[in-house]
Length: 259
Ligand SMILES: [Zn+2]
Image (cartoon, helix red, strand yellow):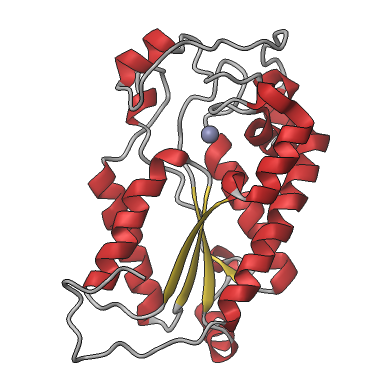
């Protein structure tokens, strides 16, 4: 159920029965000479949409930009400032809340988004916004980590991983025509983290981080997509069972314990 394909009376009917929305988040950034610029948002969108199909839930349009400053030494990368991403995510959630969508599952495909998005969620709760918000990075689900380890072992690495590239190969097979394939093999430089754009390119000159994206295939992508969707669906169902509490007017947010 894609929000972008619905008319407002259909959204009204959905809201009579449901209060949940899936919101995919990604990035537009380099993923080695082989992987697509859109890898992160293509993968997050695929996982969110499969769960949306399976559980008949609303899926919002994907946010295709994230915080990717450390990849800016590679052409085509686009970055938001962390405060911009946090501001956009908070405004989108405020809009959902205004319509009664009080359970918001953020399905993320990019590590650089995690801290700013968590800040946005904390800020919403600080201002006493109602509802349940959960940020799930599909690649970080234990079930997916395990499957990736079984498929690719040490070649998985941390960026431009064969896992995420497999999902994008599954979703956009034609985009890989003519992309250069190289033999597997890792580049494991000593480094600190975080890195700025110039430092990143100096340490990881072709954009991979200890990964062999060339091991990716559409078949592996389908297996990982299914694994991620099943694991995420379980978490969504758990979230659907949680009670919603009206915000208390007597307790100010400041100074309250976190969870
Ligand atoms: Zn990525």
